[in-house]
Image 1 (cartoon, one colour):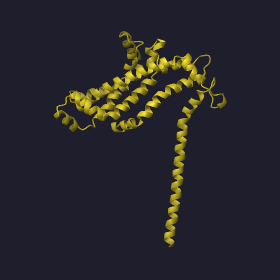
Image 2: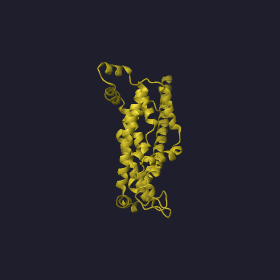
Image 3: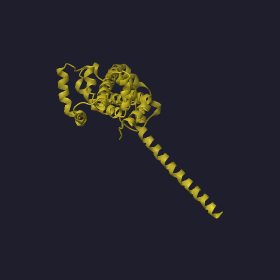
Image 4: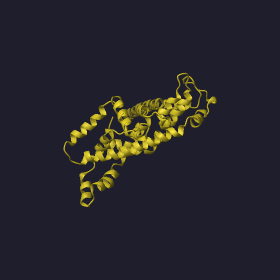
Length: 284
């Protein structure tokens, strides 16, 4: 009996320790969530004020929607949003088409110097974007593409999408492709009817990556756009700041509007995005 009572006491002690440790872990995770969400809450609250000086204090009784009204009435917000949506839509479409075709070729086709060409292509990712600013500007100017949508989305296309698609497509069984060939399906049919449907998770991941990269891009629109009507939302938001005084509430209202679109996209595609990253082998 004494031994049984001792075992029960030990089990109770272990249970209490487990509860305490679990509670501390949950408390730490809650603290991390609060720290992560604070910048977004601060941005939203500031967007409802008329602050000229940044501070963490808020007068909730003075909050209103004047900053958002100013964005729509005095700041051509819809034009800049339209430009950004056109650019990111084109960037996502062409990046998916080019990356999926190239990824399929590198993953499933045999041709001379395939590995050398692939790694040489990947080496372009190691080149800083600042190095190619002047050459790209010169090329776009020579082609007459300044202040056009193609100039804004073509610079977004890079080797990362090809790498992502190639990593995923290497895991598609060759037996499926051979079965399709036996059934009389051509290469384009195999790609469209077999490979692409199986690659849906990684395609969604590539769309999310491309959308966020293109939507938040600032340096390329700054270099390639000089007309106000062609500015993207990110570039146009920089005009809200002044050398003589800045309404930080208006700036935060613009930042909130810019944040909404990629946030909504990620909420709708979260499951496929996480699945695509996990299956493609991209970690870290």
